[in-house]
Image (cartoon, rainbow, N blue to C red; front, side, top):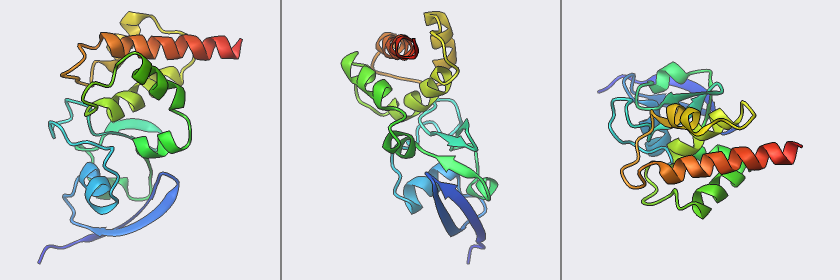
Length: 161
């Protein structure tokens, strides 16, 4: 019998208590136990960015964090950020700029892009590329993703006046 550890964390604003194996990754916990399947599993080495989530407000790779390490912390997935409306304009830009393609990388791309956009201002294309460089996309060649992030930054800046 495998030993388990009790954890309590806040996921997308809701308190979650669970018994987990000590070596269960946060991404697996979110997908398998909470059915939050927007957190994708890609390389399982922290390289591709498909498993990106926010942990206490900072983006992390869910495949590199154990669920027990998140005990007492706040986790936000793409579902939570999307449900709050925080990502709506960015999601719209991804759709309009055809930055979705297969969609596998999209949740991690959205959270990573939002981290950059939350800083305010309009980053140049090189800054966008650099910030997004830890997220792999095998379909779009990144041009459409950079276009979508840049468009969203410009629109947000214009709305702020």
